[in-house]
Length: 580
Image 1 (cartoon, helix red, strand yellow):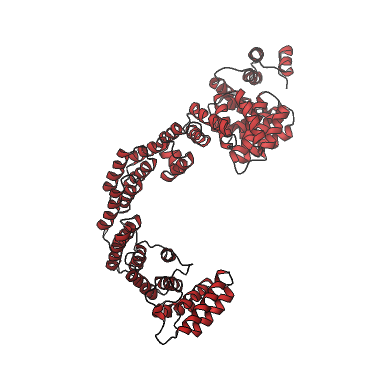
Image 2 (tube, rainbow, N blue to C red):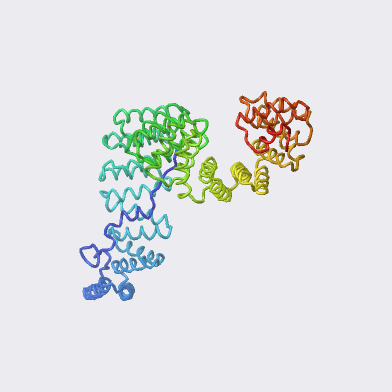
């Protein structure tokens, strides 16, 4: 249970000093403080001098007022009023010790003056003199037993000193004038808790709730109390009763959800959260924050993603046009690979607020996955303009230009994008892969080789790069040992890929290992779904060196019919012989 709570003592004293700045008495000098031996003439002089000092105070000349009051205290030791006014000035200047001495004497001279004891209580608080503070408050309750705030302040201090029974008596006295207020109930609750009397503490809150049936916060306090005491069944009963009375209170649903969380009842917790999330009275930002209070990020996007989906749909019910809600829904559907639904949420979010980069990135991935080239071109181009320091848009827009064979533009985009990549080896490798391909297409073999080398630094087992790099080296007849190693690795990585098998056979052929080349070209043909022109031409070339020349010429012809082009192939057919 929670420990005894205390109001700030300064706040307590402030409650007492309702008329602290005014003089507030019928006469300037209390007759109680004047000895019988004091003459009328002395009283008259005291009154005149007090009025003059007080006038300085009213006019704002506190320095002069202080001097005059200090003189009055010396000249008229029985003048409690001057001590009071001087003490107030000292308090303003934080001269608490001096003020304390003045007020101790003043309260001795006049022990019926409420204002004197109020000021002494304030000064005692500032000095940390708990004994004098207690005495002052106790005296105030005697002077004004009907004033409940004195009793409450006294009860507060008694409770702090663990005098619980006396503190409860003081709250009972306070209730006589104040009534059963929230302040009284809370004070008693805290006192009972400090006494380890949990049942009595809850009675105070229940009484408060019963007396204020139209104020739901008190019912909530009762339920929350049971939660803090781990009396979950009783708490659940209270929350359900509140929901039965008013099912539209979103905060009650949230409290119930938190209770279910503590009870380990996940299904009920999620259902209560859904009810809260469907209610538009609570803003979407608060709900999204709550979501990450009940679930960790790993749970939302991993083990509890089905629960997250239900909550996301509840959010969409309450906030169908909210950008953040649509972004969250789209993001969740994207992670669940429900791309049609993800696209709806992401596009709706973007329509309301186009500043969220991750929305654009996920849309580009969806368009690419769907083969939606029109939207991929449109959105990737715009994303490059909006987010010039993000690499992904450059990748997708560059890919679009590459497929259109706009090689100069594609190369520019890929080079710009790769410079923006930060600690993402996969993405860096992808950029360099296409820089290598494009550079080869435009005849810049040196840059092509450098790009492939960089790509393999990021991913040494990228089968696509290994295959292409090996094939282009073989075509040029350069670094065939390296080409053979790369082609062999590509086959190991994907042994059923006919392109990889063909490249391996072609590298062997270029190394004049015609026997092995024939073995691997036959594997490539077997693995191929359809025989392309390049594969047929390579097969013919290998057969030529196996002295099957007529069959080789037939294959070259088939290669041409299958779409293979080039002057070399034409020369082979026209001269009916193998040429490099």
